[in-house]
Each structure stands twice: as C-alpha cells, then as structure tokens.
Amino acid sequence: MPPDEKDRDQDRGWQGPEGHRFALEVLQLSLRRQMLRLVAGGLKDAEQIGQALNISPSLVEYHLSMLEKALVIEKGEAGWEVSHTGRLSLEKVDEKE
Image 1 (cartoon, one colour):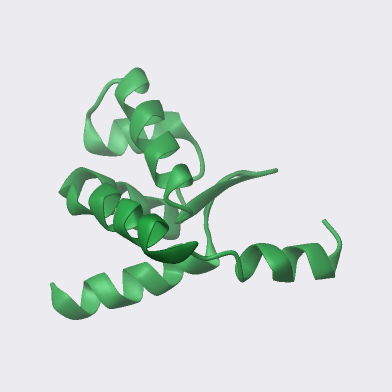
Image 2: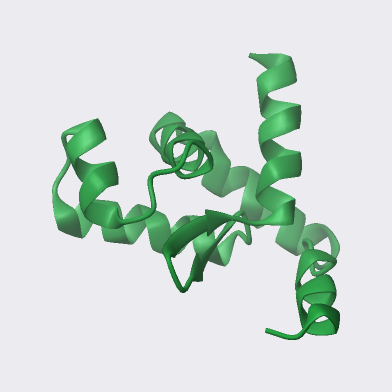
C-alpha cells in the first residue's frame, strides 16, 4: 500500500457518533477486548487466538469480524493487525481498567 493510502487509513477513525457508538458496543464485551490485546501482542491468525482463549474457530472469526467492523483491527498480509484506532482504544481502555 502506498504511504499516502496508509495515512488515509490511519485517519479513518470512527465516522460520527454512530461509528463511535458501534465501536464502544463492540468493545464492551471483555472477550473482544482480550482478542484485541492478543492481536496487539503479536498473535496474527484466528487459530492462534482461538487456542489462546480456548474458543471455537467460528466464534473467533465472528468476533474478529466485529472488531474489524469497529475499525480496531484490520487484515494485513501477515494476518490480523491492530489499527491506529485500535491502538488508541487500547490506551484508553487500559487507563480505565
């Protein structure tokens, strides 16, 4: 991806109050916050995440797709990665927990 496209993606963020509300709803579930932390810690594929949390592959895929829709993770060439928005979210969540 060219650098200017990557910068645009980093600035995507949540679009308006509806996007922000959706992301907050997605991140209310502690399992999803755990998954976000695992991705941030270097786990890149659904199988690794499922094994770490002892949950089924279909459940992992569902929750990863919800995290992706909330713009906190994105699928990269090497697997799942935390987005710029996801990193900001982790910083704020970790401050409060």
